[in-house]
Length: 271
Image (cartoon, rainbow, N blue to C red; front, side):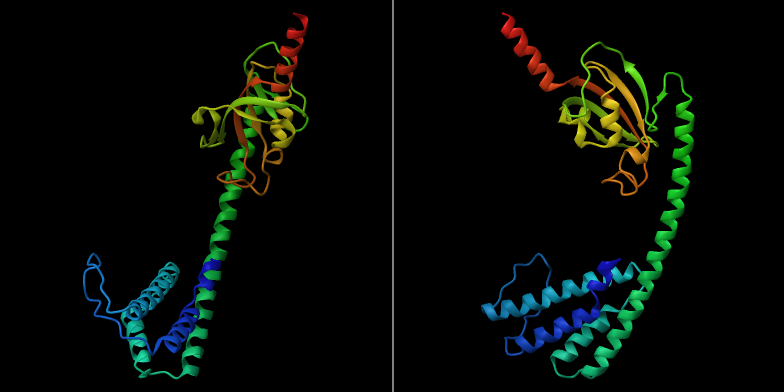
């Protein structure tokens, strides 16, 4: 909503006034009643500059009108064109003071409507969040009862999909994994599998649920983690992940690079 205030018609009017003051001695613009696909021709660079000024201001005003139309406030473009034309010909029906007073009042009206809509959107978002959080709370409670699910002291929920014997990482280790991340509603927000390339990262530089959960795994194992929001991205969310979201991950621990390298080095020394 803040963009609405930045692109006000008051600002546009000031821009037009500045443009007029600086360019009144330039050559007049050619007739523009041609198809947009026609190649433009100008008698000199000054005429081209004059046309560019008109085009730039028109686009600025059009963007402003579109944003305000989203608020349900629409102005007649033909009247705006008349105001520009009259002012360029020194035939404005309003004095400078009247222009500024009128636009200040209109800007105040736009801001009031925008703030009202913003408040309504915030109220709706809060209601939607409440409903979603209740669903996620119920999901966590139900999932905790599922067969094979273990709940840790922190609230992390996990189950073993594929069992294997191998080394386990420490929080300070770098791990190589494949994973798929989804929201409770099934929306997939990230997947190394879809990218076709495993992810490698230090285990102590990811969300708490990952740091804790992956340390439980042995290389070669695949786990399902259900991570409460306070062990994920919390109140801030991240990208397409909403605030206070419970996250579900299927994670396969492929390798602990540092330990794999140490094992290889030890085997070489034995030979």
